[in-house]
Length: 192
Ligand code: 5GP
Ligand code: MG
Ligand code: MG
Image (cartoon, rainbow, N blue to C red; front, side, top):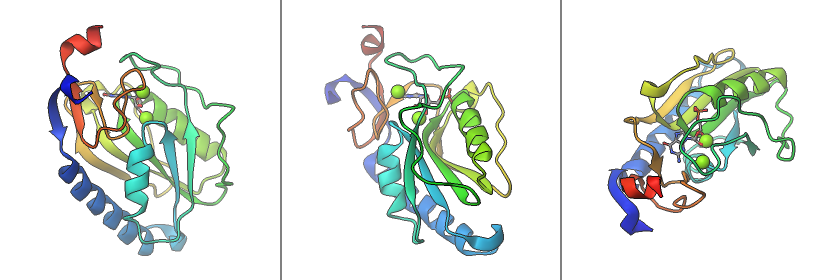
């Protein structure tokens, strides 16, 4: 598996340091007066890609937070984004998020379609604010502008160059999620 990596973009240590910073930032923001009523936020991870990030991030947030996951229509095994993501009907939120400050946790924001769909969904379920915390953001590929809800904030680990990346939860054909770093595959792997 590791022989198929052409280059590493962020090492395990670099990710770990950044995740610690993001957790501290969220802890500070949601403890202080910056969010009205300063209630602890509900963490909603976007399955499957965000599972590693969620696991690391929540342990760096020092607040009493509920954690849940949601699933949306995905890439399948390719590298082309789904322009019309749908919320999986068999993988619904367990939490009632009405009146809660939600932080959507994503692996990577690419076109923005997935987040835009999820933000609308959280709003329709009565979240009082919707924030986003993504490990990576690929601004070069943005197609859809999304708006946070209420006093929602945007947290981003790293700006990602325009590559299809794998590792730290992110897959190609459901493989590579368990790499501890984020990297790019050798071009022949994407073609095969
Ligand atoms: P969007 O809807 O913003 O185009 O894409 C969002 C989803 O597509 C991400 O949550 C992620 O699961 C997947 N995705 C986007 N870019 C990449 C990438 O470079 N690598 C991998 N493995 N998945 C990606
Ligand atoms: Mg994702
Ligand atoms: Mg995928």
